[in-house]
Structure formats: C-alpha cells, structure tokens
Image 1 (cartoon, helix red, strand yellow):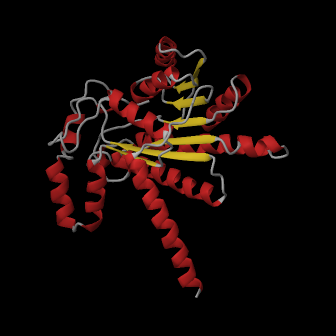
Image 2 (tube, one colour; image 1 turned 45 degrees about the vertical axis):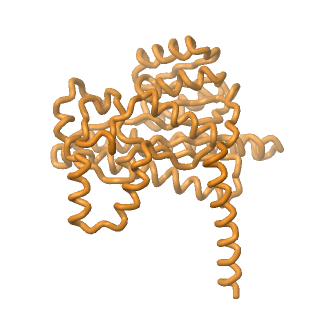
Image 3 (cartoon, one colour; image 1 turned 90 degrees about the vertical axis):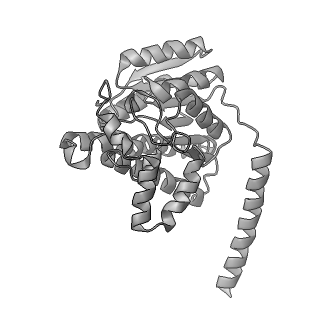
Length: 318
C-alpha cells in the first residue's frame, strides 16, 4: 500500500510539474532582478567570463571579478564600468590554490559583502591525446575545472551557516544564493583528445547536480542552481577548433553563449544545453551500441578537435 500511495503521489506531482514546465515554455518566467546582487565571476579575465561581467554590469549588479591574470581582469573591470557597472572589484586569485581561494573569498566578504550569485567559469584545456598529457597538466585541469568548485562553494556555504545561524536573518540570507556551474558538452559526453578536460568537466557537472538535490532535500528552496553545458566556444581556449558539421555541433560565439547563460540565470533554469541538438544527442547516446557510438562520433567530426588543437596559435595553460 505504501508503494502504491507513494507512486500515486509521485505521478501526481510529476504530471503537475510537467504541465507547469510546458506552460513556461510558452509563457517565459518573470526574470528576477539582479540589481544590487553581489555577483562573483571566476575566470572573468577574458572570454565568456568577460562577456558575463559586462552583461551583469548593465543590469546593476555588484561585480567581483576573479582571475589569475590581473592585467586581463582589470581590462574586464574597465569594460564592465563602461557598460554601467558602478561597483566592480577585480581580484587576482589562483583557483588552483585552496589557501588563496579562501583568503580572497574572505577578503571579498569583508570588503564587498556576501556573494549572492556565484559563477564558476574558470577553466583550462590541454587539447592533447591522453598518453601525451603531462602529469602536471592533468592535476591542473582537475584543480581548476573541478576541485575549485568544491572549495569556493564550501567556503560560501559554511560562512553563511556558521556566522548567521543564531539569528533570524540567517534563514533569509542563507536561502538567497544562486550557484552557477559552467560545465561543457565535454562534461556529459566524452570527447576525443580532451580526456582530462572531459573528466574534470564531468566532475564539475556531477558535483553541481548532486548539490542541487542535496539543497532540495534540505528545503533550501532559495538556493538555486544553474548548470550550463555549451558546445565549444570561440575563445582563446578553443582557438582553431572545428567540427565536421557546424550546423549540428557549431563553434559558438561568446556573445551568444553569455546571453543564453544570463537568461538561464534570470529565469532560474536548472540545466542549460547549448545548443539544443545536444538534448537529442544525449538521448541517442544512451541507446546506441558500441559501434554506433563510434560511427556517431565520426559523423559529428569530434575527432577534428584533436587535429585542430595542434594548430592553435597560443597555449591556454595556466
């Protein structure tokens, strides 16, 4: 009887939520106001991070910009201010160093305030076949692309919990945070020539998804999560990367991806795949045989990524 009752309740909730999601596909959700929110963007010195910074600046957010390259970070700060950002704070931070992450995060809390939107965008890529990847680059890939997510999220959560738990405002403040994980198509499907990058992005995706479910169980409905998986973006990281059929698996422009991510954050979407062909590809992936998977990868031209990485004009190692 318990199983029947539980199943009935689940089906009722599932149907209601499904119909609600269909309605929102036709009538978009009201976008939340981020004016005055403290937005921390890790990896803000260039590429997608810079684009997101300028967009949030135009919406009146307070920006905290993290990057290992302070010169590029200062340039992002200048561009953000040109777009209307009145409070922009560039901070040099090495995402590989746990002590430095905690030190800079504590400095931000004291000098700027409590971060309410955290965008984990810092990322590196080697673009080499597995047997050609230096050991130190494997470690760097995981430190920046995955483990950094643990450090900065734990610091943010533990600070709010331990500092404010004795006060009523604590329940309000701890229930008002938006965590954004920038993963990748390589974080949901293994990509030839990107074994360390794929593995680290899989880890970031899994961490963010697990955290989403944990927060739901804890009834922290005000702590929202957005997990983003774009195809390859036309940034310095993937300079020269091509695919066989761009209309199916395109190299995306930074501006387009930034707008899609911004919209997903404002509408509090949980998952965002860019572009929509990925949704179909991921379903096909689960039902294909071994030979079908290899043929599908060859059809999409994923193998082209490895060759084109060899022709890049600059390296993206930290």
